[in-house]
Length: 98
Image: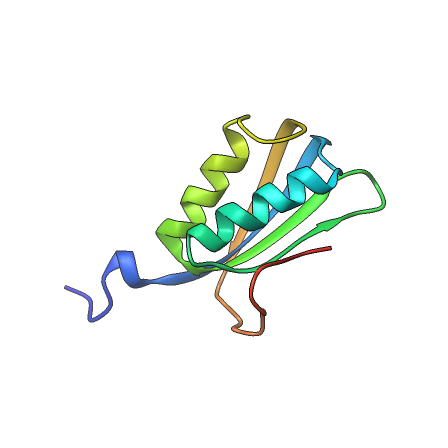
């Protein structure tokens, strides 16, 4: 067994959310969900109409955030979510919305 259990492994999730999601309500909802899960990071509007969500914390909490983004139970209309996983960098503040 690993010294660090799967539940304790940290990861960085970067997700690009496509759809009608650039309102303040969507970023606020994402921030609230991330803080509820104990994640750090941010949600930013991008010039092409997507929202970029970057979150770090326990991998299973990041997976829960990703599932929530894909659920469709968010403000706005999520069409697709593209994700990328990486090692945490540890340079993120408490979750912010921009």
